[in-house]
Structure formats: structure tokens, C-alpha cells
Image (cartoon, rainbow, N blue to C red; front, side, top):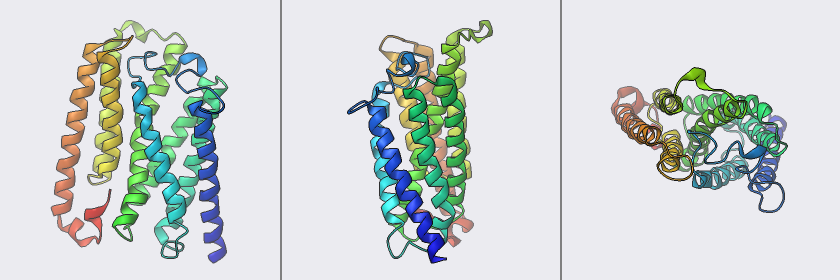
Length: 272
């Protein structure tokens, strides 16, 4: 089993390195083109009504930091053979590779390819999230590094998936079947909120997914209140959805912490 565990740990570490390299390419800081400018600007803040403002992408710094921390964390003596990391390691590694693949697809202008890639990334993260929910953290630090990182990652990718699919439709001339754009924008914002509530229910009030989803929705509101593509109805919908998501998640969290099932599960109160 030690050989199998070592292989898994190395796979996660190598995947993290690949993802970090991809992030540098996607940032355009050294090589490559910034994501907002790549693929003909299809993912720019003013490309669609559900595109988050440019500042939203700062969350990637926190997510990448968490992923690197997880790659290191799983190597520590107390974590090497932990059953939860055996269940989480490969999904996390796959998510890192899919993230790099998504960046490359955008860099090469393959917007149509980016949608199935990000959909696969979302599916893998859902699997990782559910596995994390069903296992108990070894400590509060494990909850922050493992559960917190996966939760933030999933919440943000949920928002990014909605924005990515919308960008592809708009780039291909989708006219919304004659329905006014603001109505579509409100519906898509509501869809992201529903996804967040579903994660809150499945995760028994996990805070991390809510934080990154709220962050993404907040930046959609900022982008629609100002900038080159103003839409007050969509902005208001994003604000309302954010508030509802936060309140619902906190209520579920409080009920989960107080419930006998939660109390019986060691460490549940510290899960991120």
C-alpha cells in the first residue's frame, strides 16, 4: 500500500506543478495572453451579462495557494496513509490537470473545447467535494487545507462554468430565442445561486463553497453596475442571490452543528 500511496502523493504534487505553470501562462505575466484577452475577449468582464469583473480572478491566488498547501500536506507523516487522502488525491490531481487544459484551450482560442473541459472539471470537483463531506478531517488544519481548498475551488468553478457556457453561446451569435438579455442574465445568476444552495445542502452548510460563489456573484454585480456593459436588473439579481445564498448556507450550517448527527461526527464543527 505504501507504493500506491507514494504514487498518489507524487501524482498530486506533479499535477500541482503543471497547474501552477498553466496559471502563469493564463495570467500573461511571463508568456501567454491574459484570460480576459484570449479567445477574442470572449471571457472579458464586458463580454456577457454574467461575466464577473476583472478583480474576481484574484481568488485564483488563494485557490492555488490552497492546492499547493494540499500537495505538501498529503506528504506529511500524519497524512500519508490517511484514508480520506486516498479517496481525494486522484480527483484533486485530475482537477489540476483539467484546469491546466482549460487554460490552454482558451490560450489557443478553442472556446468550444473549453466548455466540455470546464464541465468535466466541475464534475470532478463535485466528486471530490462529496468525498470530503463524507470523511472526517484529521484536524482543524486538515479541514482548512483540504476541505476549505476543495470548497473554494468548487464554488468558483461553478460561477466560471456559467460564465464560460454563456460566453460560448454569445460568441456563436445566440440571440436568446428573442428573450431580452437581462432576463437571461437574471436566470443564469439565479442558476448559480441554486447551485450554491445545493452545495450548502449536500455539504451540510460548508462555508468555503459559499464564500467563492458569493465572491463571483458579487463581482458580477460590480461589473453590471459599472463598466461597459451595465445592467442594473442583473446586478440587483446578483446582489439578492448572494444575500440569499449566504443566509441559507449559514442557517444550514447552524442546524448541522446543532444536530445529533453532526455532534456525533468528530470534527464536523471545524469543517470549512
